[in-house]
Length: 353
Image 1 (cartoon, helix red, strand yellow):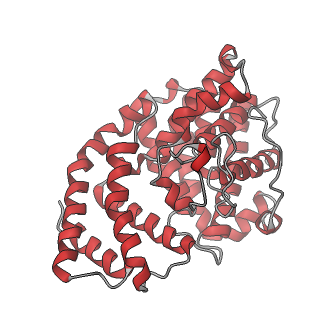
Image 2: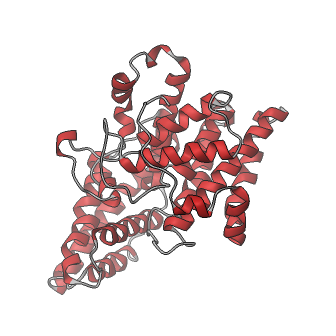
């Protein structure tokens, strides 16, 4: 491992229930088809990089690993389990490795990256959010959820025939990308018990400061071309993760609502209760505005090229949504619950073109 964190997150019940690709496919059933469609599309898009049998075998192993990660997230926090998270579930995987990765491919072209780098982005989409229930305990800015997700990802890679030495470029890139997906802009001394949904609005991805983490934990990294390439890929991965800011506005607004719902779930507040009204209003108002206009930045030239125009187009719409929601709520008096705020948010969204 490049960052050198001690292992502290052993396999849990989900890993025991889905130990391999066969068990994952059996549990997913027809739910595997959307991801299989992604694999087929990606295989066609990367055809020029898959002429060698060894490259095709690498693609197949990476696809197996992505499917296993996808299934485990679906079981932990998605449609297969009992602890559903409205944002961090298997749909988030499909968003990243489907339309967002495809947009990146169309923008920079398949030859802009090497095959292991493209596959690292696929695996990042599937594995960076595997764990969402770890107690907050960042080390050098890397969150506990991310460290746990990386530990599990290593076990997934190994189980699918990927080797830390032979496939080092993919392995290293995935480690740095998952670490760089940590969200929290506050100084380390002030980091406390914000939940995973809170953290998305607390600051940009750690990827923007990942070079400083590497300076502390792997001082010679700048002289290693493989590590430099992995660091650059981590910046692209962070842009994929936050590219909801560039999607069609209805999808972007829906992602904001889902994050808000997840935040209230993790905070233990019912959306039907009056105690959720102000937190929901703050999250969908000032929280979204601060993240979008102040904290979010694209970290890579590739990310800016692929997603920058979409974000720019959404900026005036987001301002209109926030102001319109506030005005609608003001006309109706003090909101009685988070559900009331979300209803006003949706009604305002329906009037924005």
